[in-house]
Amino acid sequence: MAARKAAGFTQEGLAEALHVDRSTVIRWEAGEYAPLPYLRPKLARLLGRSADQLREVFDGEVASDAVNFGPEVERALNWVDARAGWSAGEANRRLRSELTNGRAPQAPRVAARGEIAEALETYYGGEVAGHALYAARAGSARAVTSIFTRPEWLAPWTLDATGDLELVPGNDSAARPIDGTAAVRRLARVTEGDVRMTDAPIYRLTEIGAAAGSLVGRVELASFVEYALTADLLEGELVDALAAGRSVKSGELPLRDRYLPDLASVLDLRGRLCAGGVLALTAIARPADRYRGEADYLLLVQERSAQVLNAAGKLSVIPKGFHGPLADYRADARIGATLRRELEEELFGRADVDNTAGGPRAADPMHASRLSRPMRWLGERQDRTRMECTGFGFNLVSGNYEFATLVVIEDEEFWSRFGGEVEANWEAAGLRQYSTRDAEMLVELVGDEAWSNEGLFAFLQGLRRLREIGGSRVALPEIELGG
Image (tube, rainbow, N blue to C red; front, side):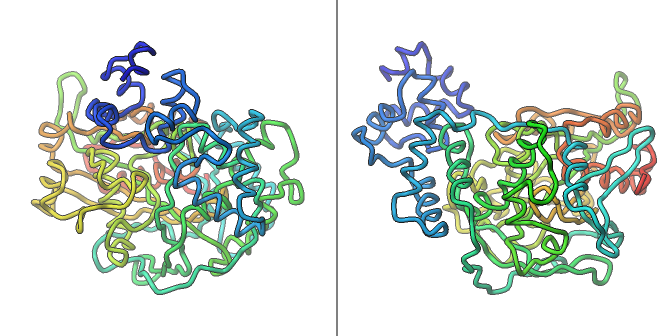
């Protein structure tokens, strides 16, 4: 309390600066629990304290060279020691050196989406029969993305309990080689910045194929830390090379040469950790309005916050989340299960289904009795919501699999009832609204270079599907694949 007052903050002001509830600050000051590790660097800066001084306040720890970074980072450091073949404590020592020498980046660099896609096309060159980079034209705007896909992967299908992915037993314990130095640098950014990284379980894709008008595949469980400290490093390496004007050809990007050297390795799902994401264009029916005009669908686009591990500062559809289990590992493998959870978390305010805050305490976090008011209302009648998968591909940025989906809320009453409760969580720095009857603005949006490649992929595929099913609510530009 004294440190907060000395820094000139009220409880409300500190809570707002940290993007937490005032009740959280009250509990810190009451000694009920300490701030989570990802919040501590920013809290220390706001209070004018060092990281060690903050630990003394909340943990009773004495500043020393042996002080912990926090359980999540400590576990990651131990993992780096084991996988890099270092002696115990070496990763910890190197991380301290990074932070002491001020080499940890304060914010992720950002490159234009088209520049990234072009660089990856240069790096990989060549072709694989039946596959191509996803490209499309919307009116005067043309986009080529880093999504490596096939024509049969771009047909829509309904998400229901019978489809898509199946969890199978697997042992993903193969000691794939890692770059320990690059992993420590990533942990320096996590420690020094406001980045959340929790070693929650994720799914790794091991098989995928088209069948009966949809895609079916198999997944196994994997470690998020391994993904974050290996494949997820590739985007930063590429962006840094582009910013410095360096070559992006094979042989010039050591991490990419190690983890994802060619298109054959992209498709070799058994030979690598292929993590994935589920992202949705959300379209909400609205009635005619004397100011806005005719009945339409509201489209939501997010600006990703600096706290997310990847695609920070980029535009994307919302929700957007990693494909991983929450509580029921087998049932949660379905794409629709992840999508419902992400709606609850990213648009309807359910913080207790956020995996970055630790594992769930509820036996069934998505039980009907625990759902948010908007989600419970949508579930009362099947005709209120349409959920479809609109496309699939591999993102060459890091090798991720991406399921592009579309969520259409068909009942106009939803926006009148719950429009004020739709609010993005910490993963978004802001939300933008667009109308499906404003073709000019949507064409301009497609041409915005701030998009993430996977975000634009899902946006364009969602627009294509809305042109087919939206009826009089849409006046969308034609989306021509290949462009």
